[in-house]
Image (cartoon, rainbow, N blue to C red):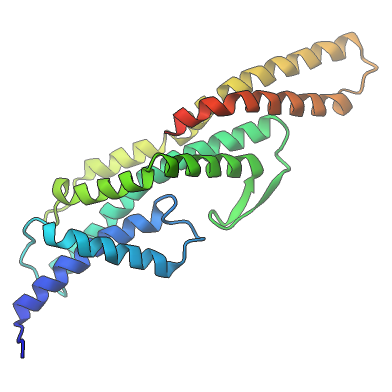
Length: 242
């Protein structure tokens, strides 16, 4: 009969539960992994599988009881690290969705929206299209494997310890999140410029021929120009997604 001491049992538990907490934190918020269409059982199973592989290669862990205050502090810390890593990728996808929102509003498709279960709100069709395109590119370049690699490497760069996390890292994440609108605007800027010239041309046409119903002809022209320009822009969007 195999007998285990409390210290041995605690060592086994912390070497599995602490890395599992970091992994599940990332899976919860990361693109693709954290999508609502992925069943919770699959997410937990993937987290357990990665934790079983990572645990034997972990650096020496602090000798802290899992149920102590220090153990709970480390548990929360690991969860925050995992969420932070996944948040970085989520921000990149949010920037692409912002570009889709801006483009959709500019070409007059603001009314073409539907309920998105992922964001639990109304989303423009073009924003959803951009998000799906980015997700396909992400999978095509093995971004999901790279993300798992970053997660595994994080146990070496940010080892499990009782030391508190540096506040500078959270400020960096907040600053990174503020770039969402800027990056989305940069992606949509060519289309915005062309539609601005189109609207100026329609304004000049209205001044020269007041009898024309600008609302009747302006919308199809703006929509047509926007879709044509978007068709030319899409091949150049993929490298930006990468």
